[in-house]
Structure formats: structure tokens, C-alpha cells
Image (cartoon, rainbow, N blue to C red; front, side):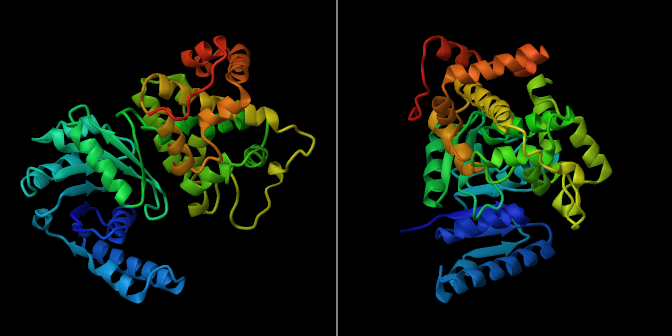
Length: 390
């Protein structure tokens, strides 16, 4: 089989990870960065990864060598000229990305597809700076790219639709699970996951439960990590920035309102594991305020957070951001949810989910808890979600 050449712009953790994925799939890779040090670090890091793969028996020594030789690291953008696909994976800054795209279009062929790995910027907005925006789209990988299966394929308004299936086929060939999403803030995963953090923070803000109690409740129903553990792992600065971005992009919809507690943690420098302290301490200092109340029924925490997640998924479906199949794949493969949100709604019953939301809306009187119109309609007609919808 003849493999194509892919260009990756940016040799940081994400760009290097995508380069590894493509090389493991047999593609030739041109990895470009302005920094020679970044390219050297990328090479050393991949050598260590390959050594571990050899030690575990997942690849042979010859396969490891071949994989590494398929990646050409360079500071010269002209070397991207033979590429069928170029993926930009640099800093989340519109003007910096647009300068890169302007230089890139002078180098690659007219048939080369150009993609951005952005997780928070408008793909349509980025496309507008290109001379040929019809060949531009988003390919959003998740970190670490070699391990995380999901890739969100996000066409801009200007994207020629014939290129979407081409990218889906390539990502499948790379061993990924591609899902297609409309170009909306947060795409699928980063939007649908907001209540997992936001509602957990709201519960703790009101002192209804401790972070430890919330985390224990969510892990009891299959989540690998609770919201506070996960925010500490991601970094509270990163998680807060995504929340603010989605909130602003949706014109300050109260459903996505950031948390004052999280803002204060960022201001205090309590960023999580990377700073030694977040919602938990990572220096062996006990946190007595986080003790679990063994008499508390965790179900109300589970009902509140999962119902809000399901509500987001229902809105996503009704606005045709993605199909039900892709919504389920995105949340199970992208953030390792124990089951798809629409499947969860079917299991609980749509009417039950609607009841949880209506009680929250009645208690708080906030638009934050407004039920999705689709949930209301389905409950009224005793319907369930079709999980195989394409």
C-alpha cells in the first residue's frame, strides 16, 4: 500500500503525538517547528517511547527504527510541499495561526488539505484567512494523541464537503475513531463535558458536598475519575480557560457560567497536580475538610450532574451538531465516560431525566437548568433516543 505524506506544524506534545500516530500507521511525516530544540526534544521523547514499545513486545526493533525514520524533522516550511495533508498544532492564537497558513499556502499543492488541531477557536474564522478555504477543516485530536482514540472532524462553513469523508477515511486508517461535528464552540466533547465540572463546582460552592464526596459519587457510577480529580489532572488554569471560552462564545449563556471557586484556585496558583495543590493536596498533607460523610446518599449528586450532561447531549442532537452515534462515541472514546449520555437517558428514562432538570429549575429559578426542548417532546411522547442514527 502506498502511503501519503503528512505535515505536522508544531513539535510540542500534541504535534509530536500526532506525528507518532501517523508514522505508526505507515505514513511519511514532515514535522516542522521554528525551534531546533523542540525538534530535538521531540526526537528524544519518541526514541524513549519506541524503546518502551520494544520492551513490551508491541513492536520489533526493526519496526521501531522504521517508525522513527519515517519522521523528517525540519525548520524549513518548504519541505511540506509533497504533503497530502498538513495539520497545524501550535499555540491557540488566531493571528499566529493565520500567519502560518498564509506561508503554508505558498508551499503546498492545490490538492493538499490543511487542518487545524484547535480545541477552542472557530474553524470557520480560521478558514477565512486562507486563499482556498474550501480545503480547510478542523481535526481535533485529544492529548495524549497516541493513546486517545477520538478525533473530532470539524468542517468550516467554507469546507468542500467532499474532503470530510477523505479525512474520516485517513483517521480510520490511522487507527482513530473519527466523529463529525459542526463548527460550534467546544465542538462535541468540550461542550458536552462542561456540566461534569460546572455542576460539581456549583455543588461545592453551595457547600452541599465536599470535592471528595462528589468525586466518590461519580466514580461509584463508573467514571474513572471524579470531576475534581480530573480538573486537578488537567490543570485548573486550563479547565477554567476552556470554560470561559465556551461561556463567551455562547454569548454568556448561564448554562456555561464559570465558577468563582475555580477562578480563585487559579488566582491562588492552586492549579492541581502540576503545582502540588488544587482541590486536593499532592504533598502528603491531609485535607480534613474533604472527609466523606458516609451517611450521605450520593444519588442526588449523580442525578444532578448526569442529567445536566444528558441535557447538553439532547441539545447537541436537536441542533444537529452531531449524530447520536457520534455523540455517544465522542463521550465514551474522547473522555472515557462509562456509557454514552443518550444511552444513559434511555436507561433512566427520558421522563426521569426531565424531572431532575425541572426540579433544579424550580429550586433555582435559573435558565441554567432549562430542559432541552427535545427532552420535553420525547418525554411527552414516551420516546427513547435512537442510538444508531447516522
